[in-house]
Every structure is written in C-alpha cells, then in structure tokens.
Length: 289
Length: 340
Image 1 (cartoon, rainbow over the protein chains, first blue to last red):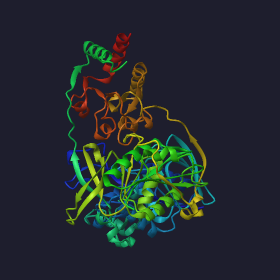
Image 2: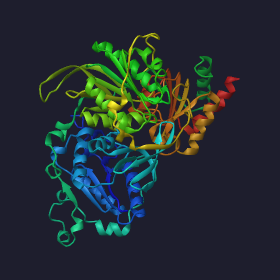
Image 3: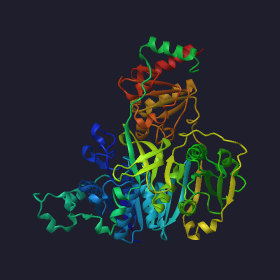
Image 4: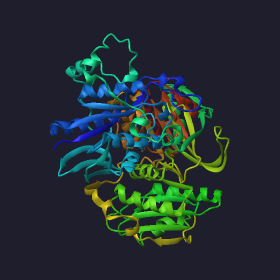
C-alpha cells in the first residue's frame, strides 16, 4: 500500500518572543516584526506522516502551507526532515483570512493535489489557538475526521486506527480513509533534520522567494526539485470572494490594550519576618487555614 | 427563527456543566435580544433523562436526538444534526463548550454553514457595530471577546452578515444558575434518520476510557499556581508540598505546562481552567492576559515573584518580592508555626 499524505503546516510568529510592534493598527498580526517558526504541533503531525512513509515505502508526504513567500522556509524544513514535496499557497488575495477563508483555500489546494489518503495537521497553531482550520477543511472536503490524535496506531484495509485524547481520558477510533487527522503536541516529537537532505534541499525555493541574483541561480535549471510549488488563487481554481478578508465572516471590531485595574497592593520582602507576619495576618483574617 | 441556541454536550446521560453554564449565559442573551433560548442534545438512551438537566436553565424549546450511534460522540452525525437543524431554525447565535467535542464539532458546522466561529471566548455581550469599510450599521450583534495573540490585547470579534454567530467558551468561564426548576419548555423528539444518513456512522469508537477529573481546580477555595519561574519539575514539587499544608489545589500557567513540569489539566487561563477561588497564590507567574483571564475573579490574589514589574503584581492584593525557592519554604514553615 502506498499512501498519499498531505501535511497541513503553518509558519507562525514565535509567541514566546513577542515585541511591542506585534500587532497592526487593524488588529491583525504584524508578521514582519516577529521571528517565524514551524508551528510546533504541525511538526508532531509531520512526524506521524513520516512514520507512515517509513512503514509503507513508496508513500509520499507533502507539506501544504499558506502564507507570504517567506513561508517557503517551513516547506524546506519539512523536506529536511523527510517530506517529499511541498506547496505554498501565496497570493495577496489570501491575506487577512480568518479560519473559514483559510480552510477554503486549503481545501481547494487539496482538491487540486487530488487523491489524498490522509491529511494530517497540528491540533492548533500557537498564534491563534483556535483548532478550527483542520475540521473546517475536513467538512469542506467531506472527509472523515479525527482530532486530538496522540498516535496513528495502524493503517489497514483502507482504515486508520488512531488513539486520541478526549476530555478526561483517551479513546481509540477507526476511521476509513480518506481522513483528516489533527495531532496533539504531546504526540511523538518530529525527527531532526537529516544532514543529507539539508544538503539536497538547501537551495529549494518558491519562485517568489527568489530575487533572481542568487549565485546559485543556474542550479534551478539543472535540478527541478529545487523549485517548490507555488500556487495563487487562480492556480487552485479558487473563488476570490471566498478567500482572504472578503471570505472571512469574523471581523475584528476592536482591539484593546489591557490596562489592569491596579489594586492597592501590599508589597513585602522575602525576609523571615515579613513572610511570618503575612502568614499570621492571612490566618488571623481566616483567608487561609 | 432568530433565537439563541446552545449545543448541550453529554457524557452518557449526564449533561456537562459547561453546557449548563452556556445555557445560563444564553438565557441572558436571549432576554436582551427578546428572543427564545433553544437547546439541542444528541445521544443514545437519553430520552427522559436529560430534559430535567436542561429545561430549568430557562430553555424554551429543547430538541432531543436519541438514537444508536450518537454516543460516544463522533464528528459526522452530530455535525449533520446541527447543520440541518440550524438551516431549519435559523438561529442568530449558537454557543457550545470549548471542549474536545465542541472544538471538533463547531468548526465543521461553521464550515458547512459558512458562518463565523470564535474560539475560547471569555466574554459574550450584545452590542452594535459600524463597518467602516462598507459604512453599514449593525445592531444587536454578539460581541465575542477573547484575549488574542501574544497576550497584550483583548479582541472583540463580530460576525456581521453570517448566521448563526458561533462561539465556543471554556468550562468555568460563565456562571451556572438554575432559572426555575419547573421552567416549562417545549421538548421536541426529532426523527434522527431524517437528519443523519447511515454513511455518517463510518467512524467507530472501539475503545474509550474516561476517568473522573484528577483534580478539583475549578471548585477549590485556595489555588496555588506556579509559572515558568518555578524553574523545574522539582521546583513544582514545592508547590504540592505547600498545597498539602494549605489544603489547596495546584494550578499552573501555560508556560509551566508547556515546559512539561505539570499536567495540562492543571492549566489556569483562557485555554485552560477558569477558577474563582477565595485565594489565588501565583508563584513565579508573570501574568499574561490569557492567564489573568482565568483567575482575575479570585477573592484575594497573592503574587510571589522576584520581578517587581511582573504584570500580575498590579492585580495582586499582596506581593511578596523574592524568589520562589526562598519564599515558598518560608511560607510552609510559618504557616505550620502559626496555624497550630
């Protein structure tokens, strides 16, 4: 059995390193001002896909992402770890998309890729934490769906057995392919980049990532695999109205900076006397104890 | 038409608390909008068992879908029930818990209906909206309010044109309150086969293990929470020691959970548990808005932090300026001394 697997991945601002200019005046994320990384749970998803490829030789794993041209970086990172190919959806018309418009674009791309057995993505992205895009893609494509997956246990007779987290426990489900799976951050971590693959794909670029004056320009004619797939709205037969801002039913009405209602607080030091006095006060006022 | 809908989640034949919290909120929204509150529940063998757990929250009409295969939850049958029911009933607002089920189901329904969905809201209000781009005025929209991105902002999201306006809310965020134990709501037992085609049942749950919650964070009178400042898994053990003395429950910030020092079910905040304790002791927690969203209603807040500029200090009643390694053992020592 050979599987065709699409991994949904997102390049996200690293929310662990957020600066003051992180938001635009319109309330959307100012991506240019932030370090960009492969969304962590999408790496767990990639690992599940690569394990299936190990198990079923001849299977193909491709990374599908939507974003600005620089998002080509995460396709490369996927190739370094063992993916076979990638597709970057990039077009100004995709910009400003909420989860619904994003899922529309991704679903059109998956239709264009065609005959996919499994779509695997991270449970959620760290910049939004919504966990919505995976299920929204599945619904648009009429795929079966298993969210919060911990491990893909086996693939047999066109059915996938998956262990998943639920509130307060775990369950094991069997779903016929094609199926969309979203993977938790507690699943197995992604394998490291492979040195040979880094050598092979170091210069892989989407056309829009190139300025045209790179010293290695002649390589692209010799090695077609270095030119990554780059699709615009028209390439995936998309309806412009359903993409980007116009395809997004949710609107940001207002964004407020938080100013905490400062309380009158009592500040003490960590000295024995101070801590002792505080514990006495808390106990005598029946706050604790 | 145009009513407020709440999807009620069940475990066996028990309606989940988060759904009852949303019914309470939904009742208030319905009153403000002068419409009815409707609820929908789907499961197996639930007839005559769930009605009394739902109607007293002020539900005017309850749709019950009772058939084999609807419990345990799988995506497709519940999605098809909601999609078809919403097409018939045209609600203006639909709410569900931001649980594993709600977060699996909500996006599928919104995708099918092309309606907007906002995850993990911390407040829901009714208000007006002027779209600056189109110049259109909208009245009585659902404000879906949630902390967003990075932690310094709170965003108010609206769905101007698409219906229903959908939102998920975490457990514990809204208050649960019975409106009237004898509230007279209509109950409709829907014909499941008209909503769910046989092909929906292809995904099978073959094994399922659910345990009762490992902790009582949500209801604890004293919560002792640790953040990244705890430094390590071993550092966290200090909190469990102090918690034992104080009869407190241990919580954590997301940073501590992500670092693997403590289980995810102890996370306090927007994407974790919302707590309303009498006392909240934050140890080595800087206090990002997502965290504060989950604990700001605590009666008394004590912050232990060696950074005197930590944001959480601004909402604290007591600030102990020092490292957790130094302060917590002293708290244990002097609590023991003074409580005897």
